[in-house]
Image 1 (tube, rainbow over the protein chains, first blue to last red):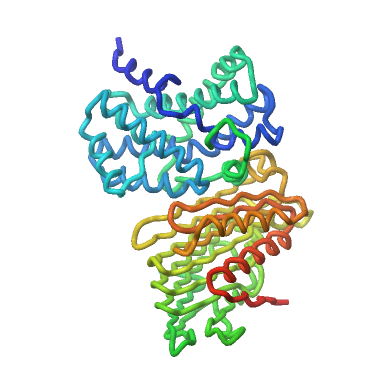
Image 2 (cartoon, rainbow over the protein chains, first blue to last red; image 1 turned 30 degrees about the horizontal axis):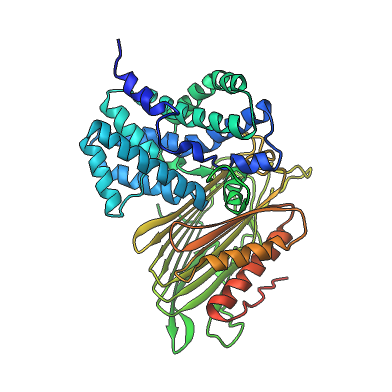
Amino acid sequence: MDNNILPLFQLCDSNFPTGAFSHSFGLESYIQEGKVHDQETFFQWLKLYLHEQLIYTDGLACMLVYDALMNNEHSQIWKLDRMLTVQNLPRETREGTQMIGDRMLKLTETLYGLPILSQYRDEIRKKNSFGHPSIVFSMVAHSLGITKSNTILYYLYSAISSQVQNAVRAIPLGQTAGQTIIYKFIPELSEAVEKILKLSLDDFGIVSPGLELSQMKHERVNIRIFMS
Amino acid sequence: MSNWTGILSLDLENRNGKTVAKRAYFQGALKVMRPIYHDDSGQVCYYLLNPGGGYLDGDRYRMEISVDAGAEVILTTQSATKVYKTPKSLAYQETEITLKKGSLLEYLPDPLIAYQNAHYKQKNVIHMETGATFIYTDILTPGWSPNGEKFSYNTVQLVTEIYLDGQLGVFDHIKLTPGKHSISGIGFMEGYTHLGSMIVVSELTNNSLLDELYEMIQEESTDFKFGLSRLPVSGLSIRILAHSTQLIERIFDNCHRLIKKSWFETVPSSLRKY
């Protein structure tokens, strides 16, 4: 039995208090414009968010951080932390992601006390790094002996399932609809992992103009339930 | 690799209040026209020129621009950058810019027009010191094809890296591959055809400037979509989705004007080319 997976489930759980439920990453802009309004339109948005944004940022970072941990090249991790932060041009999503990363780091540091997590904390304290959830997640998964592809898969699952929770509240959708979306989305996650495993640093940070623009627009949204 | 189709190197300095080239070198299919002084500010303007009229299969271009302390430069192109079909290997352009403290570079190239089946990659690397100002715009059109079909190019990839005092401060990576994605729809071009990006880095950036820019852009009544945000370093970025080059140019002109007025109390010169 693979008991090492259970601690990672804890990190993937939407009850894990990282504050991810406060960030829609531009989804709220699409909801307010009426472009995302039901199960079908949300599913389409979620596919784009995964295949055109997450795989080139968080997902690719999971893989590259995992490789860096295997090779003991910590400087590569701090470089990726900076790239993840500075490629995120919309201020709200950048700061939101940083907050989630910071909370996740604090929690996991308390739970695991891993040296690499303390080192990350030091880099942030020295203002050399910013903090990113995909990096914290990969550090924990790597220490638990989870494989590279599963690390990426579980990270993407947690990012996607918290977005589904957000959509259920914001669109709104029924709880059953939310669960149906997560279930139907599983093949998309596997496909995303396959794609990521074929990517390299050259593919890092590719943005989709529309998604990014919706994240920038959110800064000027007056009535809102999300911070980004 | 040194087998460049065109190479251009320009080192600029402030000589008694006037920006001049202390070294200018170009070879192959890339050149600059004689320097132009639009007003008595001492700021120099260079027009870049591709004598071949467009980028061809496998073409590789390199530009190196360095601007010393106190020097002020406008760099633009004489006309749109056209990338013709590239059946064998992609057309590539790289630009390396070095900006010393107290220098100003406004890099305002004309739009990019990628032809049917063209594959183009562009990389801009900017090294700047705190106290320098960098203003950059680019406009990506849906390209050109004989039958008028939009987005018939193969790939357009634009990478911009800005290092501030040696640390990566901005990373922008756009890669559009129309054959692989339904590019006009939600998430990509949102039904629009033209994409404009403006990146401004300067320690003079503050939130009230962003508010002013936002209010001004909003007054534009034509159909378009935009986003505006503060960068992780002191600066801002603007993205525009629209149906024409002209609209994006007009909005960026207005933004440029407002920024120059609030930071330098000057009005940018018209770069009219036709």
